[in-house]
Image 1: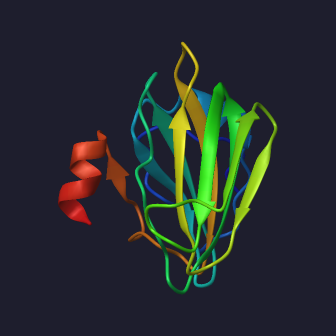
Image 2: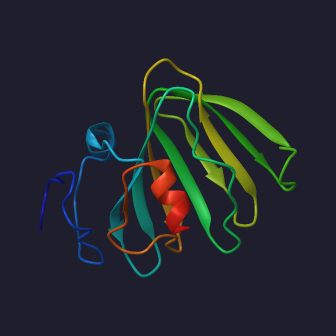
Image 3: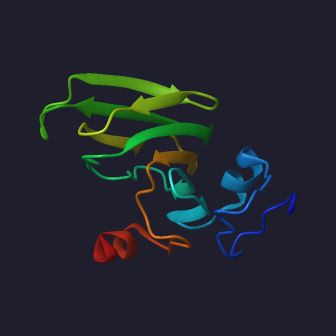
Length: 141
């Protein structure tokens, strides 16, 4: 079993795997990197620059958990695309649970990069996904 993760390593899912999630997220320079993809669950890490955002999105059939590993942000969640029902500041060690079919966005409101880990159930991205930038992610999706 592999006990560490190097940025750029291929997604080892669905094999058993152990990593330090916080360290992996902090070391990740990419907008999005798929760390592990199984049949029913996926973990990614993300790097959002100051004033940047994940972008407004919805996953019709996928629940999501996003955890802040470094930085501060505001999370906006709602059933209507342009009017969030819920908005709250979040920081290191906070986790946000996002039900399937809910519009959401996370905006970096800090002066430093925002580093997050994200769990999708079921997986939302192809195994081994690496998006160097948000523009790369938007082109692919």
